[in-house]
Length: 271
Ligand SMILES: O=P(O)(O)OC[C@H]1O[C@H](O[C@H]2O[C@H](CO)[C@@H](O)[C@H](O)[C@H]2O)[C@H](O)[C@@H](O)[C@@H]1O
Image: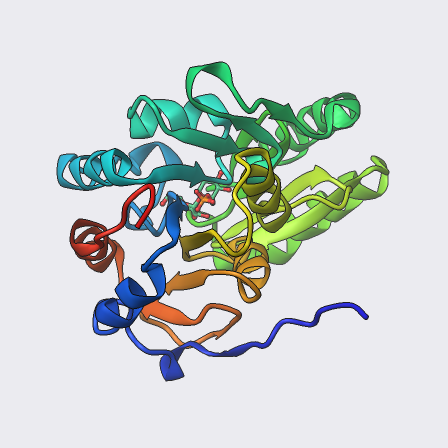
């Protein structure tokens, strides 16, 4: 029987900071591994993707955490972009929503969706041409996804932008549309997402359910796939100060609370 995740409204969830003792207790005798989303989790959401720079305090918090346990950054951004933005050696990076994975020292490489690169290239060309005249749009090509940003567009233009994206999608079978915070995204239409990537990473690291407690922290729609994956085996923390339906089991209000949580979390390779 297929597992159907339990979802709840985020304002009913307990704070991960207030429940730190409980989380520590769950980590006892388990190996901890922390998965972190980037935008909205490690950095506040800002108007342009290139403005979302990691603060030195947050970099230190993640770096110090990576001395205590395995850490993976799992982002919708391009793999090279996220690696440059975070700039910490010795941790695992997953870009393009988990389609493009690279572990420390070149271990644990995965490129999911290579066959779809021509379709993504065609879609990128068409989007660039057709959205050129729509003010405030921004196209961000990642190796295995294309984001169409409309945060700076006139709200009255959003349905026109979506129609353009949908028309291009129709002409490029093999891709699918997903959403996020003021973006439409096109990505390979295959059964792969941040949740599947998380499962793949744990399996490749030889981390079995009874030995490891994975913790995933994220804020966006694509992070829900990872939250669903962890309902059976870990801790899922939503970063949000707004109400929404989520499969997470704890909440943090914003990246500042994430930073405090990461600093205070006592977790070891073998807790
Ligand atoms: O999985 P993530 O690391 O959270 O990436 C999700 C998307 O984040 C970025 O876009 C979002 O953040 C921007 C900067 O704050 C903001 O301007 C935009 O409106 C947000 O959607 C990134 O640019 C995308 O590629 C990621 O897919």
